[in-house]
Image (cartoon, rainbow, N blue to C red; front, top):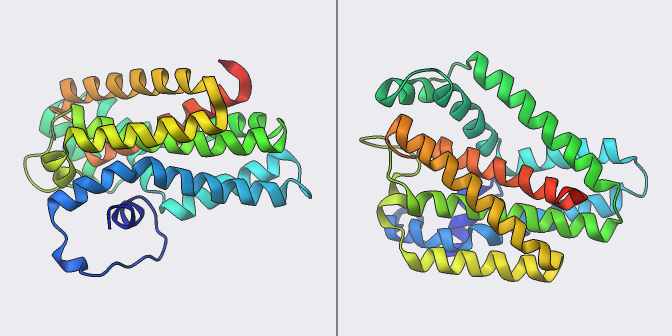
Length: 249
């Protein structure tokens, strides 16, 4: 049940589970233990596509294909959070006013600018990664997506919820326990060690630093984290993994 709920929340894969109406907040929080495993599945899908596409297309075209597939699989959920986070945290506003800006369906200048910068960075880093041997590149796709989803678990566990009522992340923050953190961390470390070896260390350290830094800024400016902040943490994790995987760390 937990893995299925995690898939339903983090992806747009057509997955149904029994007893959907009876799902509790605690069950939603328990599903966070499997967030890195969802990243592993997404990474394996991209790895399979890369394995086939690289036979016929150059890295630049393959990178566009992989980014497009990942956006489709996740329903642009995390990029939406990345852009809304830019609008809110860089608006010059604090507290409730900043939260209102983030919730507004209209896209601000900061969202457009940072959305373009983030996507461009992901594309460039991915192109560089895809110039490496295919097995190595695919291993990093799996590791990067696993650790990026781990960031959301840490963000939920360490920081309060910013909104007074409602919101995507409220149930997770209210019910998460240390058990989910330990399980998700164990999954991320195990998979990462198997596919990328010792570079698991910089992955863990950099993701931890960036996640806690973004969470601290959000807590100071907004009063805590939101679903958008968690989405931004996930995108940041993808960029970190691609950066390290390309041999820069």
